[in-house]
Length: 198
Length: 251
Image (cartoon, rainbow over all chains, first blue to last red; front, side):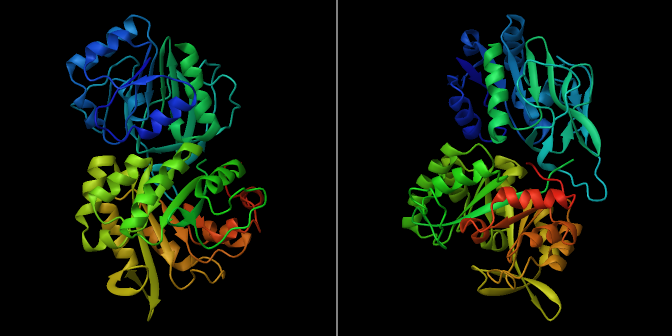
């Protein structure tokens, strides 16, 4: 059973559907104690970093404990950003700090619109479990204005003016800035790869 | 590099695609889910379902249509046509829409844009603008292009973006259905005025038209219906042409 965290940041219908399509059994926990039985945890989410503050201390603790037990964790979009220390979008709001660095706003410019909306390519600085079987250069669907820095945890890098981490992996902690549930076959493969880590 | 998006629009009435389709190999060429699946295989980047009747009866059929399409494709799905309230939008989202497109309701009740952006995020809110040139000004029309307003398209697009719209779907009434090409001056005027993506619509007749609207119209995405339905041009052929013109696409 995969725990899909619903903290009110966007609609979960698409994520649920895509997870069902790759054979996952999904449960939306009503309280952090329900994470005890989870084989894996997914934190989705769109919008402002501030909305992650809906995940109070109990949820943070519950999720960190699950990670401590070795349960794989996947952050999607805002969920990836939450894995880092924080974001300049909401400086008072702390991330899980499972990865170091701050998320920052993408820089726009001529013909470089913010938000970054649409299909863009993945480059892989190293091999990873999450992108196993996915060809370099594959395109996935993004919609975001803030992004995580490229650090040693980056397993995929995408460029919109500046390069940012479009995928991260450290131990059993994974994150994708794009929407695997909206990225066609490539996205489904990413979800499948996450399930394989469970 | 961010790809230019190609979006297929399915005009739906009572659960069936209207405007006619003649794809080979489809059991039911009017079935939106079959068509959407076909486009998905061909490499379409997004699908828009437009409810062209938007009566109470068709609303119920619409929810079934959305859900049937959403089961088949894992790419962004937008629903528009007659979304007048938060409840209408919620019904579409609950059925599986990733984005809703507001037209007349956004203009008569601009607060709806912010309400929906707060509830679902800006990425889920598209404001559709139907525009027509009148004495050198691109004016906004509502009620399926039947009723003129005093609003200028560029100024309304800016306001919609400020209120939380995530994208603008810009349709040229002058070009819609003419197959004479997109209205590039209109599209460029709006696209350079806002920082959010602009989807060009209305007038696609040839594959070159798409190349033009991306280059001269500064469009971020282009939407078409009949040019794809009739299988005259496949999505793949279009994207190959665009790539040969150095326009970034997902192939």
